Amino acid sequence: MNMHPPISAQGEKGNLKKLFNALKPYSVMIIFAFLFTSVSVVISVLAPQWLKRLTDEITENAATQTIDLEKILNLAIVLIAFYCTNAFCYFTSNFIMATVSQKYSRGIRSAISKKINRVPLRYFDSRQLGDTMSIVTNDVDTIGQSMDQGLAMLFYSVTALVAVLVAMFVTCWEMALTVLIILPMMLLMAVLLFKFAMPQFRRNQQYLASLNGCAEENYTGQTVIQAFNAGKKMTADFENKNKRMRWGVFRGQTIAGFMQPAMTFISYFAYAAVCVVGGLLMNDGNKVSFGTITAFLVYVNLFQNTMQQLPQAINNLQMASAAATRVYDFVESEELSDESGKEFKLLGNGKIKGEVEFKNVRFGYSPDKLIIPDFSAKIKAGMKVAIVGPTGAGKTTLVNLLMRFYEIDGGDITIDGVSIKDMPREEVHDIFGMVLQDTWMFEGTIRENILFSKDGVSDEKLEGILKEAGVSHYVNTLPGGLDYFIENESSISGGQKQLMTIARAMAENAPLLILDEATSNVDTRTEEIIQTAMDKLTDGRTSFVIAHRLSTIKNADMILVMRDGNIVEQGNHDELIAQNGFYANLYNSQFANE
Image (cartoon, rainbow, N blue to C red; front, top):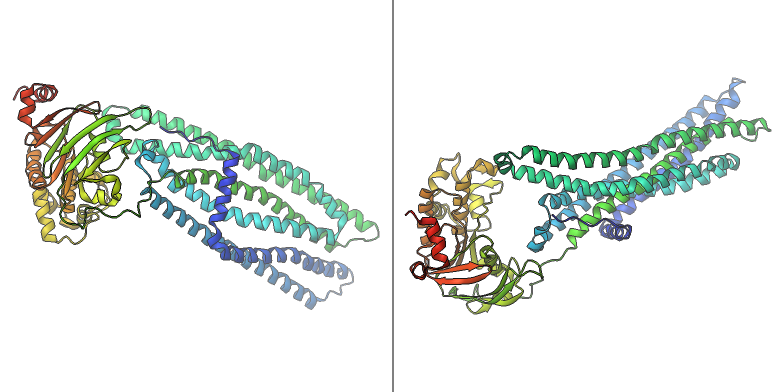
């Protein structure tokens, strides 16, 4: 299992810059959000001045009982209007940023979805499926939510901090200096948060990906887990990862949670200091009024909230950056080479004969270890070619190279004399129909699963395909027949899924055919039905059949016997049996008692 490298600060800065660059299409919306935020900040700063006037009007005239109720009412109405406008602007700003966040997240998911089809299989060979799924779900959600909260909160905090400080010094510079005494303590809290909490948050993203990978393995491998009574072992492995995640989140949230009570304590300290200084100023010739102290207490609250939001905003952006590191690791990973300039060489230019030749093919999954050192073979059009050999001989690898799922390291493969390197991958894939050993059914109707990406197939023709594949009776017994909706592929047996994937290949009607252990999940009786259908399907087509059951390939025109990536024998069944070599030993080991 591939382990991602630790996330570096340098990498995070670069990814954060990429995140901001990716927000450029939404710059107009963000500007409007910031304008509403600015209006909200201005109102938040002006409102305490009206509160000051209201308080002074009441306190100065309370003793003489000459309070101007109409003036107080007007001031109260203006104050209420301020706060209502403030609430509207704040809500609108958040609404716009939430819209930007969701559009941005949708764009990332779309980019990832497109990227998946351009990433070579080597990428997935080195990573857990759950790890990739975590990128699509958790990391993208983290980026969206963090950018939504982080950007708006950061802009609001910075602008509000500046505006509140200016307003405090304009109102009373003595009390403003008193408030600034608490600034070093708040900064200390922020430094502690960044030093201890941020690295933990970054590690938690990796813990979560590992946990998702383990959960995915536990879910998809339930049959094997139960068959080998490995439930306790897998549960223990999951619990270890879960415990690591739990303690990671606990440590991060504990440190971050310390911020709130610490800031609250500092705020109360600031309130007390302002009240003391304000009281002294009032006694010293009434330099300040009671309304001034009241307004200043509101400013202290705004200042404290702003100082508390500022590290939270940076925290959110740090989390977005940590998640972006994993997302961009995938989005910017190596892609299949661009072949938009290549033209279709065979399809559309007449009937494909189906002559295939392997010329000194070399390949290895890693540069230091060749799986196929030197492979050559020539297959005539219409031949049924069986590829046999022990596990690890290179049979499936050979087919993957033929389909260009992997690029060969040396040599060449040609179809009708045209190198597959000169064809776009789409053409190579259209030339071959394929039935894999691993069956795959997606959520949808039987019709959708069989036709898949094929259009223009009538129900009558589809019914004929089902009969040839030996699955017509089964489909007709399902509620709705072809319109039966598969919600969970586990509701269909392995054998029936195998038959349907064979029907899918028949519907594709490609000129060449690949069967990778196509009868691995069916019983002997069904195997005979499939074999008859396969004979019809392969009639007139060049076909490659990978098989462990050697009885299914006795009628093959050519049998390639592979061992350690090389062809050690080739010929038809009778010729190879007569040679009494490696193939004969394989065959006799399976059918010694027949």
